[in-house]
Length: 306
Image (cartoon, rainbow, N blue to C red; front, side, top):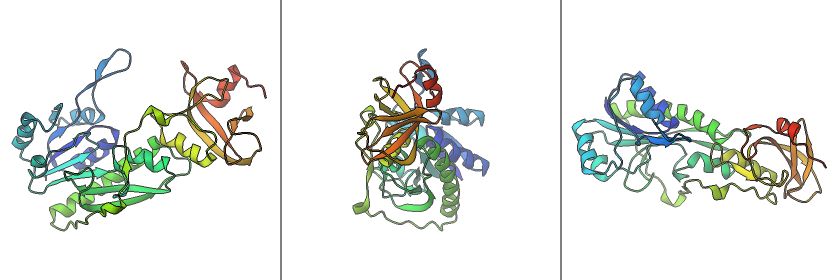
């Protein structure tokens, strides 16, 4: 099938790779414009662009895909199907109606739950035990199109958003492969979403970072795992210095110490009292101006007196 692909981050690469491997004609790959990166502000390619170039696929990077020039470029490619995966822009209706087989999206949640920009993170932040991917028709309303196919997976008790994203990327590629085959064969079944059951997964912000130690240990664990790799959970209970927390462990141990109190610090990590009377162990952190490291390694140079 002749396909135009739209995507930007690592999550989308697996879907693009699968379409190429299965012999579809990728007549165009649209991705976000190159962005300055790190202190040198050197322009960096998106992961999708990097992969597309290795396959010698034509790449297009309009600032706004709804601009007339971008729309006409897409029209000239004459796609039979448009496939999007975490592209980062909303498509106008004239593009959605352009291909004879329509436009579909690889969405990283079990719709109608978690429509929006950060479904993987919010599934973990909210303590969900299961998530998945949905292949859906794209519609004018955000992530509200008819569902074609879903695949489910459990969320690991210690799995963070970065790890889950990698797994869902592969699951999404698998689901996309099946959905495209069904569409080509005229066998795809569309199921309308129940809007009354929809929830929203907004973009993340640094305001989500500070840890409130009066919360239960499990809720804080979900916060830490859900905010990896950005913006990361943070706390100032260690030496009064605000630092990022990358990994924690629910010990199950109980304590009568007030929330936010450090109860132990050693080779296993730093145990902090939570609001439900449980201890949460910090096992990986990053001090301001420092590197990400194991809590035990940090303690070698910054011991805590109890």
